Amino acid sequence: MAADAPHPAFEGYATEAVPQAAVGSPGKDGVLELTFERTAEGTTLVHDYATVPFHISGTLGHDPLPEADTVFIQSPTGGVAQGDRHDVSITVGDEAVAHVSTQSSTKVQTMTCNYAAADTSLSVGADGHLDYVPEPTILHADSRYLQELTVDLAPGATAVVSDVVVPGRLARGERFEFERYLSRVRATGPDRLLFEDATHLTPADEDPTAPGVLGDFTVYGTTFVLAPDHDETELSDALHAVVADGEARAGATALPNGAGVAVRALGDRAETVQATLHAAWDHARTELLDVPAPSGRKY
Amino acid sequence: MSDAATLESFRLADSFLPVGTYTVSYGLEQFIQDDRVEDAADLEALLSTYLRRQVGPAELVALRAAHAAATDGDIDAICRADRRLSAVTLAAEFRESAQQSGSRLLSLQTELRDETVLNRYAGRVDADEAPGNYAVVLGVVTALADVAVREACLLCCHGFVTGLLGAAQRLLSLGHTDAQRILDELQPVMTAVVEESSDGAVDAMTPFAPLVDVLAAEHERAERRLFAS
Image 1 (cartoon, one colour):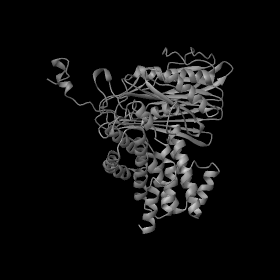
Image 2: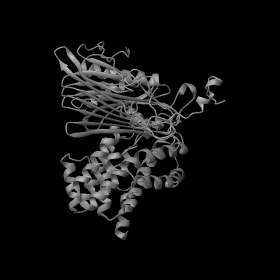
Image 3: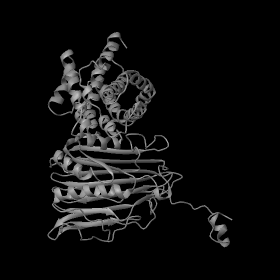
Image 4: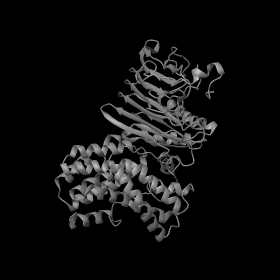
């Protein structure tokens, strides 16, 4: 009997290979476009387009800032599979304020061939603000994931961009069993490159727990507070003070080219890293928008 | 290489070169403060991470680009590599250290040599059009002295490791023999990172050592410290 057949009558079916949808076929090439603009009523989602596996159920209005708008990206699928290519574009117009997150963790499934990739471009208009703080990315055994994120800021624009990576299903003892994870974050300001950050992990080739890399930690996350028109040294010191005594090991440093501040956090569980980064986000939002960060309510 | 080039590379690799490497520890001071580095073995493992994760994928890639650009007399390309290196160096302390030692080497070399490429690049650094990172200045200086790029990369690794070993001797009870042993044992790592850096494109530098970044952030605010980074 085939190992996964639930009933003898299904045994024949279970031996049949499932021809997987090819790269580029429906469901594999998820596209998400969101455009927010400032209107008389505050920030409005003026354009949205989502193809499977992305789904949008409208906007939510519970941001501490009344004129801000919130979108939680949903997925009807179990995660990211081999051959998936996702393309996300989020545009925040002049003076608009938007918060975009995912509803749950992005689970990158086990792979036997090919890889999965997500390309995210964020653009914030003059004096606009975007919080792009998705839930963590969980890398299942043998997964290969390429994530590229770009943020472009107009004069006066600010953004908080966060990225947390969990190297396996920790509760079942899976850690650093994925094959390759490359995540690049690139920020540009008016006419110039602000900074570029890369996380490249190939656990089989290079020990991610080497001293100075992740050391004895497992979960790793960074929050970028992008505010080119603010004093980054002051903001960096303030954010460092906020995260220094948290449960996760974290620190803040001023980004190159006056771009703002990077807060890096390392911990043993996603929750502690997220809590530390949330505290930094909260402080940054208070500095930039005079309101705290959203509570984390996902509905 | 000619004798002049060889001697020039000895001079540039010598800790006698007044570029202030004795003032930097690249976060090592904090690793020792935090009891993460307690002996020679810990130190060697951490230095290996620095070489593999920071020097190789960032500094050496920039050095190679600067070396090639200086050979071609392409000042714009030197400045591009220079700005790029700053843009991928997220720890503020490391950018400052790299620029300080870069600026010392650049002013020293412009005193010693009258080279158009060097002078024009120094002019761009003065005008704030390029940050003047140490690895980039070293790439330019070695190219102009006919030091081959591979030797220049090895020289950069050697200088980095001896600088940190010097810092370690003041921070840890590390004997001279242990320091020399680490330098000797890291030879294959230096060779490997130099080899790997030859594939690196200047717009795809990927240094990655998050715990170093976090400890460097703590070091920035440390009340008592011996080193600038």
